[in-house]
Length: 124
Image 1: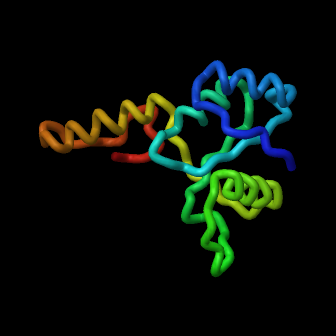
Image 2: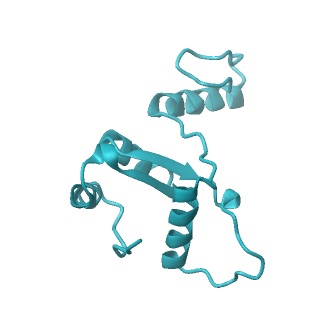
């Protein structure tokens, strides 16, 4: 396992990294879900890279492990991902995201009853 440093979350930087690592179809990536949303997931999957988003609470930790750095977290995530110890979360596709937003607004306004909408994976 080698560290490639910190990569900015910009489309051109992500594309450059994927090209550097090899054919996109042979790559597998994962990252912890965070406040930045799923933009990186959508970028990688659009390029053909298999990507999983992991809930931070589902990453196994040892008791007493208190020092947290981005590099250590990335190494631990890579090891756990390679061994199959991580559980990915479901990521909405963009259409269901719009559907969820629309249904949530409609529910707040109470103007419609929200039935499952075509294209949604779950009822909102």
